[in-house]
Length: 73
Image 1 (tube, rainbow, N blue to C red):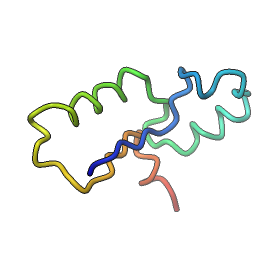
Image 2: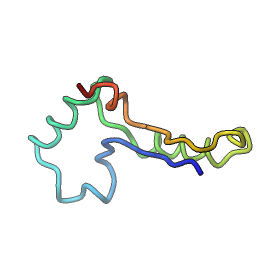
Image 3: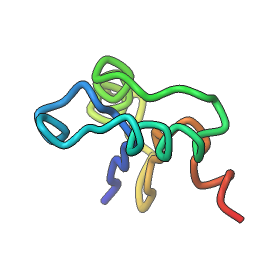
């Protein structure tokens, strides 16, 4: 099994009504790429995992988060 682990993607229903300037700034500060992700970027990773080319990709957690985990200290 392989799973997809998206990072901060504010343009989704999950964040509706929850975003504040402080929250966004806090989240963005942890992302080495310096920006939030987009639904399209998460969809592209999902499409890859669903495609035949990913047939040998297994037992992984695909992090789609702009390097957030690398930025943790």
